[in-house]
Amino acid sequence: MLLTWWRNRRRRKILASPMPEHWKTFLDQHVSQLSRLSPEQRELHYQRVQIFIQEKYWEGCNGFEITEEVQLLIAGQACLLTVGFASDCFDRLATVLVYPDTYVAKETLVNSIGVMTEGTSFRLGEAWNQGPIVLSWANVLEGAEIPDDGENVVFHEFAHYYDAIDREMNGTPPLNSEEAYQHWGEVMTREYDDLVDQLRHGHSRFINPYAATNPAEFFAVCSEHFFEQPLQMQEYSPELYETMKLFYRQDPAAADRG
Image 1 (cartoon, rainbow, N blue to C red):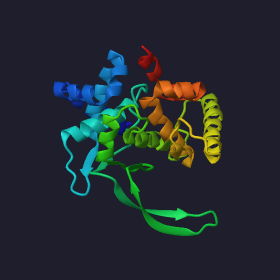
Image 2: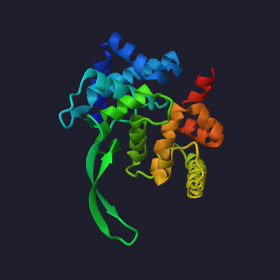
Image 3: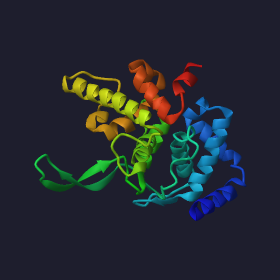
Image 4: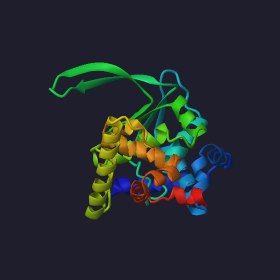
């Protein structure tokens, strides 16, 4: 209770000062999906960007400098995912780490017979259970500059963060009822299995093949398509689109259709 009171008090202080107009201009110009929002949703988005920038600890890695532009572009894309929710859903996120480009990370892999190997991999971003969000700035920029190709590292990693709010990254984010969990499981499992089967037989699909890695990646990739290619996703699978719409409580396809 005390922590909630303190957080709300701090946020009231942040929002007591209106967002600078040049921040709004930057967001409107560089986060193209904001054009789909109602005036009320856009104002909520602005507020959440203010809070996000002020509350998180930002750190540049490998000599990268955290600037106002960096904070606005990352926060602007991340907070777009939250406008359908009563809270911003990123309360527990404390740190955002930003590399200038693709970076190398250590990883431990366990094969099917339990043998563990350690190595490195090149990454565009990552999200951890109760840990930081890590992003490549070059890929953040690319996601903003090409807003309709279905690839956006910020949407992807913050979808992972949603997924892990219940401390388990398994492709099922926290939902509000048993019926919602049942519907989610039915639709997402069927769509994931269908994608895996089609790719196994050499058939290309609308969904990025990386989504077939596991259910967690499937949800994150679907989130990218939902916000960047909503009409194409709806045409590809109306039920998949509807399931994502019910979760995010947004309807970008309707906005694009006008």
